Image (cartoon, rainbow, N blue to C red):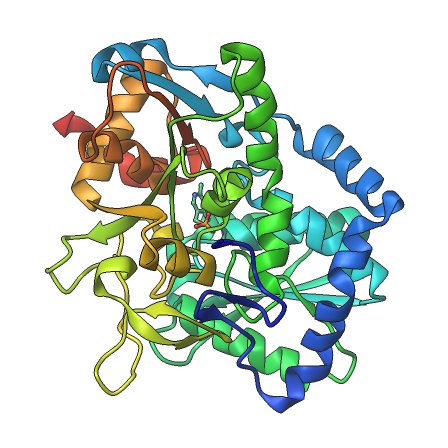
Length: 395
Ligand SMILES: *Cc1c(COP(=O)(O)O)cnc(C)c1O
């Protein structure tokens, strides 16, 4: 039987593993040995569940979108991850990791961020726990994402500009890893998605799995069955998708739809459609699909949405797509904008630009009137209003 869970060695099929420099071995190995035991401790679970409930605001509603369903002539539910503290699913992961870091005795947290959403979610939990927080961010992104930089500073985090390469996310990651390697005090690195060396992809997927756990109970109550026919989520690194898929991975009756950013178009040279353009390689410590030149240089990704603007994809998703378990759909900037305006005006919900990609998939895939579709509404669009207003006259 095939399984989509990580194996003993940290692989999903041929993808995953931990390709790390010797200097990081101790830190990552400590995490690998202890994460499952710590997460299984009743006291850990109690604190994690309490914070998800009272601090983040879980469970989120599963909302039946009547007008959207009527338009697409099917049945569509929205999982409202947009309603949480800090505006997206990301705090499920940062809360889990900060509690783990505490139990490992860590005194300092490092993180990298692109658009600043993961940086804000990390700065938030560090403030909550009184732990020092350093966030690496590309110098160009610091300029582009000023409101999130202000939020992180307000929360007491130190934002360090990365000035190598293109001054964006992958350079921030490089700087964060350099800090991680060089600090003898052994900080915890809070990775923001289901990427990085084992055990990060599995650990983050487990923290996010609360999404599909809630969907099961909510669908059972509303529809008398615990699963949808289609589960749709956008994929940058893939953490909100991993959480939405998690309890359905071994249930072939649930079609898993992974929606990635095509930027200006898959063949335009300005894209982040990793499943189409990616080839096997190693990025940030794991073997996966990534966009690279023939001699292995990482190709600079592009998407209007900063959260999907990543040259790789988590190893779980590489395996799901490669094995045919998940269907990948690529959505352009323009199609995502269309979907964002459409959802805003059909349902009164302004989605994050990343999330809008998931909605655009409704125009690209097949389904019937009796199908039950769940779309993971990963985050709200407040952070993207500056982008949306530039297009508002066209809609
Ligand atoms: C960061 C972000 C994403 C992309 O990250 P994943 O790890 O792929 O989920 C998607 N949606 C929103 C709202 C985000 O903030």
